[in-house]
Length: 353
Image 1 (cartoon, rainbow, N blue to C red):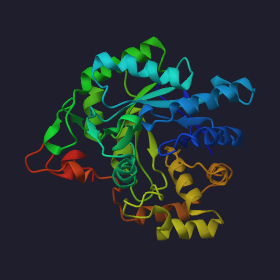
Image 2 (image 1 turned 135 degrees about the horizontal axis):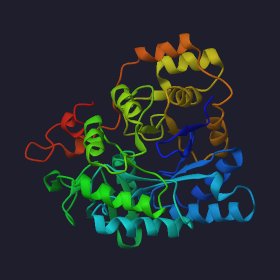
Image 3 (image 1 turned 180 degrees about the vertical axis):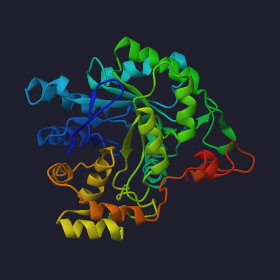
Image 4 (image 1 turned 30 degrees about the horizontal axis):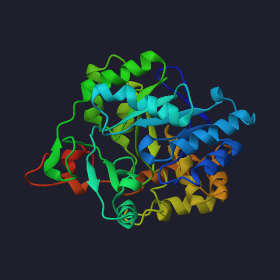
C-alpha cells in the first residue's frame, strides 16, 4: 500500500495526514505530537484555523527531543483568504512560518478565491454558535480574534474588501494575479510545492492554462459519498494530486446532512473486513489515489485512523462503492441570491454538484 504519492515537483507527499481544522488551541499541540509518535508524517494546517502557534510549539519540542526530524515531515498550510491580493501573499506565508517556527512549508494552498470580510459579533457565545452551524470545511472557515469579537470567514469566493458577509458583496476572483504571487513563493523556497483547494475541473483547467508553475495539489471534499470522479480523472490526467479533506464526511458536524460512516456499503465492507467504517472510508480514498486528511484530537482515534496500510479492500468489495448515490455535503447555498454573483449552487461548482 502506497504510504506516499509523488507530486509533480518530485516531492513525496504522505498518503495519510492529520487534519487540524476545528482542533482548538489547548488540545491541538498534543494531537499533533500523538499523531507524529504514532507514525503520521503529514500535518495539514492553515493560519485561519487559529492554532498554528501551538502546532509550531509542538513541532519544535518534537524536533528538540529527537522524536522526528524536520525533513521527515510534510507540513501543509494555506493562504488566509483575506490576503489573496498579490502584495499580501508573501506577508501571509511569513506569518505562518513564524507561527509554525519553520523555514519552509512543504505545500502552500490557495483556498478558492475569496477575500474575507469582517463580521462583528455581539459576544463569544455567538462565535461558537456560528462555528458549529455554519463552518463549511475549508470553504467556510471561521477564524476569530475573540478579544475584539472579530470573525474572519472564508468561502470559495471573493468579497469586496471590508464588507459584511452578504451575497451582494461577492465579486469576481483574480486567480492569475494570486497564482503569480504563489509562484514567487515557490521560487523563493518558502513553499516547496504550491496548490489550490476547492477548485472545480473548470477552475483548475483555467488555472493550468495560465500557470507558469502548475499546481501540485487540489485539496477538496472527497469520500465514498462524494467521490469526485470527474475532477479526480482530470487531476490525474494533468499531474495534479487530489487530496481529500473531510474523508470521513465530518461526522462531528451536525449541520452536514448525510452520514458517510453510516452508509450501507461502507458498513458492509467494514463488517466483512473486520475494520471500522472510518478505516474503510480512509482506505477507499487511498486506494483510488487520494491522500486523506482525517481530523481527530483523540489519541485512540488517531491510532485507529493510522491503521490503513497493511490491508486492502478486495476488488469485489471495492466495486460496491460505485453503487453509492453521490451527494456533495458541502454545497455553499448560503451565497445563492437572485441578484448576486452566484444564482445557483451549480454555478458555484461549475456544474459539479
